[in-house]
Image 1 (cartoon, rainbow, N blue to C red):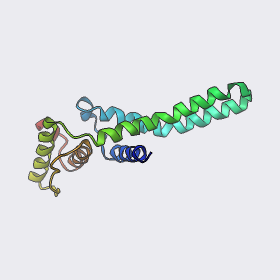
Image 2: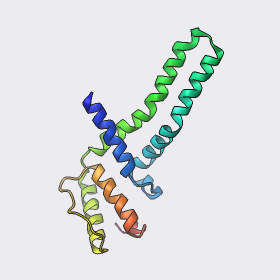
Image 3: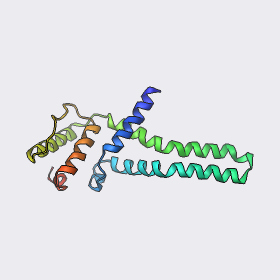
Image 4: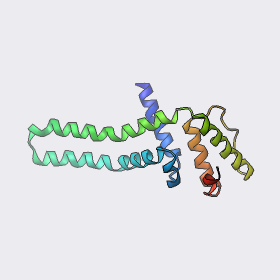
Amino acid sequence: MTTLTHTLHRGSAYLAVWPKERQLAALFPEYRMTTATRLALRTIPALMVLSLLVQFQLGDPRYWPGVVTSVLFLASLPLQGLFWLGKRADTPLPPTLVTWYQQIYQKMAEAGVTVTQPVARPRYFELGETLNLAFKQLDKSFIRDL
């Protein structure tokens, strides 16, 4: 159970770190996943409450198992997004993305941005942190130059 909670917390941290830049949608599935997870985190609780209120208004106990099932399904949707993001955050970068990660660090250092040393074996979480910082500190055209 602790690995599940760790993965969900890691996914939440990755959700906060990954930049909300449309330019990354073609390169990484994270853009779509973070957008869907953010939407689910905002809307699903209201849908769950609405589903329960409608059932209690109708008042027929025969339908309660179906309502409970649908509420549990709705509750699982944002958790699935956070779980996927948590697993992805801890996945090591493939070699092509490692060189890209290092190029971004080099570009930020050349631009005078204060950065720490790049991680030797980066994961997607570190890439997300780096991209987030790069989009804040550099011109947004840096992604085309790489």
